[in-house]
Length: 365
Image 1: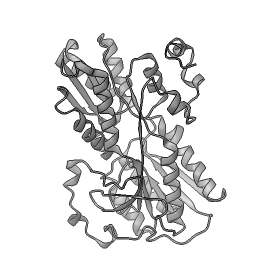
Image 2: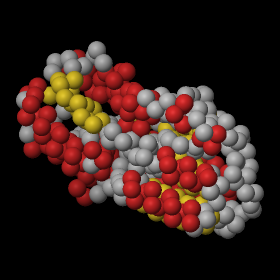
Image 3: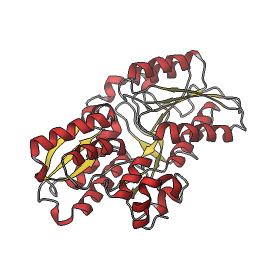
Image 4: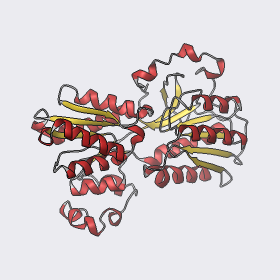
C-alpha cells in the first residue's frame, strides 16, 4: 500500500504543533513507548463512539475481540465500552480504563479534539493508544482507518456517474457528517475535489452527530428552499443519513440518486430497490485486524514496523504509524462480488420477502 499523509480539516489544522510541544506529545516517541513488555496475558481497552451506526456493534467490536483472542492464544482480555455519541462519557470511560490498568487502548473518538486530554492521561499512565477509524488528537501511538479522502472521491465520482448529462441541470444537496468527526471533513474534502465545477451545490449541511433524523430535517429544509423540481441528486456521507434523506425525498415525491457509505444492510437493500444509488464498501475485517495487531504489539512492547506501512499526520502529531485500508464503490451491479463474497451478508439476509422481487430483478438470487 502506498505511503500516505492524510489531510485533516482546515479548522483542525489551526491547532499548531507548537501549541502541543511537550515531549510527551511529540511525534518522536517510539511506538511502544511506555508499554511494559508482557506475554499473551494482556488487557485491551476498546472504546467505540456510538451504537446508532450498525457497524460498531455488528462488525467492529466482535471482529476486534476475535482477533485479539487469536493473537493471544485466548489469554487476552477485552474491556469494552460504548460512549453512545457522548464525548464526556468517553473521557470518563478512558479514566475508568486507566484505573482498570489496561495494557493498551483502542479508541474510536466521539470527538477527535476533545479526546486529546484523555489520550495524554493514558500516555502518562504508560498506556499506548491506537486511534481506530477516526484520527484522535494527542500522543497516539498508532492509527488505522480507510483513506477517507478517497472515500469522498469515490462517492463524488459515483454521483457524477449517476447524474450523467443531468449533472448541471439542477442543484445537488450535500449532506456531510458531524463537524466533530475528522473523517467527515476528509469525506467532504474528497467529494468536493470531484464535484466542484461539475455540479451546482444548492444546499450543504454538516449533520449533527451523523443522526438520520437530523439529515431528514436538513433534507426537508433543502427541499423547501430549493424546490422539489430543482434537486437532481444528493451527496450523503453515510448510509444512516441516506435513510433519513430518502424518507424526506419520498415524502416530497422526489426520486434522485443518493450516495452513502458503510454498506449497512438497510443501505444495501435500498440499493437493491433503487432508492439509494450506491454505498462505499469498507471491509471491516482488515481494519479491525490491524487495530488488534497493533494493540497487541504495543501491549507486548513490540515494534509496529511489520504491521504499519503508512504514516499519517494529525493536528498534534506527525508520522503516526498507520494502516490505511482500500475502499470500493458498491452498487447493485457488484453486491455479489463485495459484501456477499466477503461474507458480510448472505443473499437471504438481503433478499427478505420485502426485497425478493427487487433482488430477482437484478439477478440477486
